[in-house]
Image (cartoon, rainbow, N blue to C red):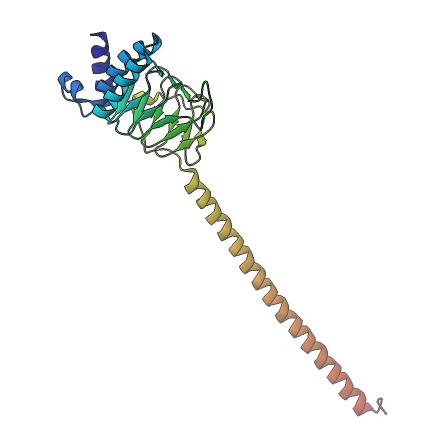
Length: 244
């Protein structure tokens, strides 16, 4: 009963589409987490086959795969949820929100802890992949479609492939706004910087070309002037007989 109350509060807090408490029972996230809690208890007690069987039942019903060995904190929510995968050694803190298509996976056949640790109040957006055994710090955001391959400090925003930290020391709690779109775009910033540098370089080259053109004109004028003076001098000397 406490789980149901918790899920009602969580879903009402994070999904504006819900209109009544009964709708909670229609959410794939509710059933995926419900079956996970039971499967995890079986897993901890060593009933691995039963735990996996229950887990696979939940996958077929919800499209969300949570390994029963994963450790998940309180007030966990998966919005929509289809395609979410959470690996065996994943550790998830409290108040974490995932969106559809998120993978919390490993990077190979390594043994032991091989999946990420997700801190408290973390939001991982649609289609993001967090791969490897490292920590995503508290209050951090992972942008949609990002591929995170290394540790993220607390209060950071990560976007891109591979993921790069684009904002630090952001103390806003993710669950308070759940904003997935107003995130910095480092690729766009890099392109803008390159365009600016290219424009400055182009202007500099045009200035150099103008300077070279003017220099050629000055040299041509100076050469013509010397030729004219030399011709005038030769004429003057010829008239005066100095050349004979």
